[in-house]
Image 1 (cartoon, rainbow, N blue to C red):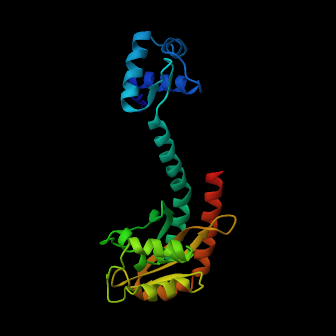
Image 2 (image 1 turned 135 degrees about the horizontal axis):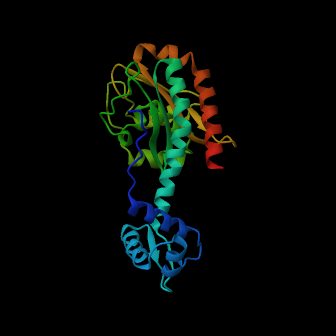
Length: 253
């Protein structure tokens, strides 16, 4: 009783990770014999591990016989950057959720598509039930309209040509000319008055980088009757958007 139980460690995993560290220490690659010596592993074990890592995409043998890290590592690195981004943004979204009593969202334009990057909700502040995929509903959501409004007219028309204005509720704007006019109106706040779902309202403000270029949008969803109160707290949303902007600048740098 009271003893701290030591974790069960898998020796083969430890050897593979140590070998990958040694491979990574040679930007121009290194032969298996050198890797085995530096990793303090038997040559036969090194060959088995390298073949396994190569099969899974984590190592690659070049034509001159040296070993380098595989393409899968770059994919992991990209995912790690995304996780670092979420780890920095989540507390900010959570703080806004608790302050306004509504679910909060952060979205970005990724490969010319509007994506929800992260959100903070809870039992008392449920997220919007995405009964229609977001790709088909940007025109009916505050966060989608906020980002569409920041695009130049050509990119905006291109996006809308690829995403039909689906009729989701009686309040959804489905006329292209009317939507384009609404998006062109200068405003720092985008709203969804039960356009995506009856009973739900949303508000969104842009998130810019240090140069003022819009890189995303911060949004809040709530009961439709609470939307006027959220509009009255737009200054708090804009302050949060600025904090996210600073967080993104630190993460990217």
